[in-house]
Picture 1 (tube, rainbow, N blue to C red):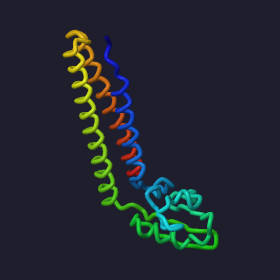
Picture 2: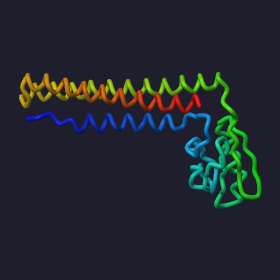
Picture 3: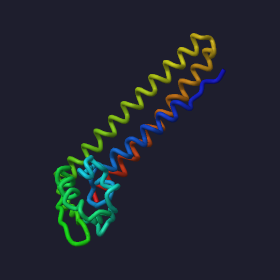
Picture 4: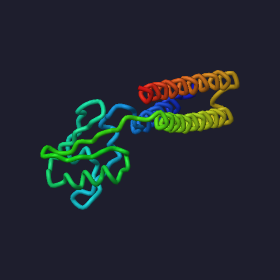
Length: 183
């Protein structure tokens, strides 16, 4: 009976996707709508994600434009962005809101690189945990008599190869983010 690597592959993929999502929220020198994903202004009696209240578009490299679908929510959206403490300037006009991102200082770039590195380390810890779980499942299958010793040894090597590939992928995601932060 062969060991099924599908669960491990899925967990590795989920970890990579988690890191990519987490790092998309780390601000770089460019303004992107994903930086506002965590903003949830008070609207219609509940905290509502910003993307459900209006359209967010890139005006230039350091400016986002928000056009609320309901103009009466402009003040609530402005307050939500201010409360999110993103370190951005918010101004309103007759069309909606303009979000200005200040130029990143070298000190702030260093902080952002450290945050990105910390999140990558969390993802690596998750991969090590997934490897441990896979090895335990493999040993359980061996004890149950479903897999022989030679097959277990081959599967352990395959598990390590999958984890190594996952770690390489995490490092590529980190390198890409650090490059964005430096620009």
